[in-house]
Image 1 (cartoon, rainbow, N blue to C red):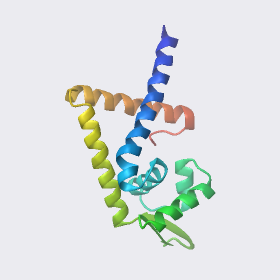
Image 2: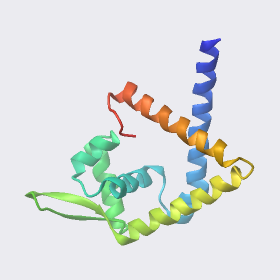
Image 3: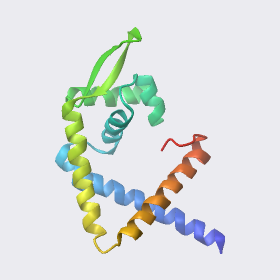
Image 4: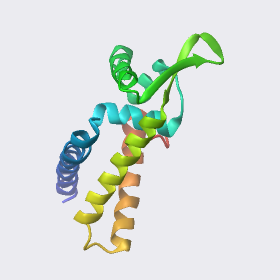
Length: 152
């Protein structure tokens, strides 16, 4: 029986990822022009603050050349800026601009509206339970897959 539950959990996780992509495409990318890849980079910088490209690539678990191309696109769009690293004049930091923060805020508002509409029949307790379980799932998967605690 337990293996059936794990199989169901994997399938539901797969479907959740697909719905997340659909939400991003239909309600964020179309309106804000920022898809999941660039949006993830922008959100990471916003949440964790200015950082070097190499640190950002490591955090996103992508090759630095990929992160460089993505960061350049965000800079070209005016959502991220490059500035000197005060600790090392040879290095630079990437930081979210005011327009980048505004884009993230609009994207989050749009996603929140869609989620609230889809789950309008749920009680606050059901929604809180889902948040708690997803948080636990993400934490446990991160620890098991990446050997990292608390960084989701």
